[in-house]
Figure 1 (cartoon, helix red, strand yellow):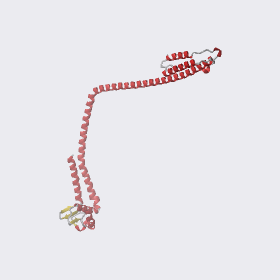
Figure 2 (cartoon, helix red, strand yellow):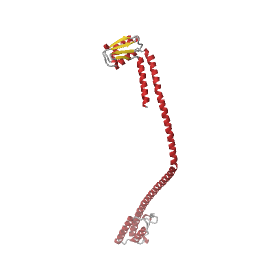
Figure 3 (spheres, one colour):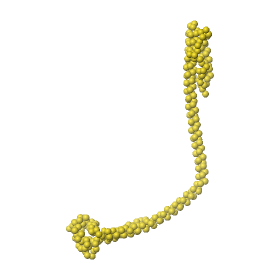
Length: 298
């Protein structure tokens, strides 16, 4: 702990009145020596301030030896004033240095406290972690077997449910495809037989699509019903263009054995039935084949 110098026991020159009749010679060297001795006894007294005081004492001795004037009062006042001024300066420097030392000590103390708190928290954290790890290890060793058994039972139960759901799904899938085929074919029957039967251009598209799918030949003899003959004869050019052939290759004949939207195309390679009912039957067949192929792959 650093002790600061007190200025209460000093008399500054501005507050002292000297009596000329009672003047006595002051031995400044003795006073300075005594002050230096007292300052040396103070712990942590700054060395640089002590060096300044010793230098001042040497300078005062030199000044006193060189001064030979008979005016004792002036010499005493000068020495006293210089001594007080230098003492005040030394006290201020000592106080400043003491404050600096105290501030540094406080900073070091705060750092030590902070380090101690951090270390304490770290130790507490490690202790807590060790306790948790110990408790976890004990709890795990006790409950591990039970947890494994429960997990295995749950997994077996889930596997059984998954297998049952898979079987149920497959059964529904196997049943839904034929059901959808039946429904689709019923819809097509209704559309082609009822709704589309009233549209005259149905036969037009049937002939054009069939011609486009056949191999090229020189002539096409097209048999149509009595109801469709006049219409297709008027659309000969358009049918040939859509079918990818020349109009001169087409010849239409009226066939009383055919009904509306029924058509036969005769070529050197054979006779092709492109009637609406035949197209619908072919569509049903393809749907059934697709359904069968999908079920077989599964």
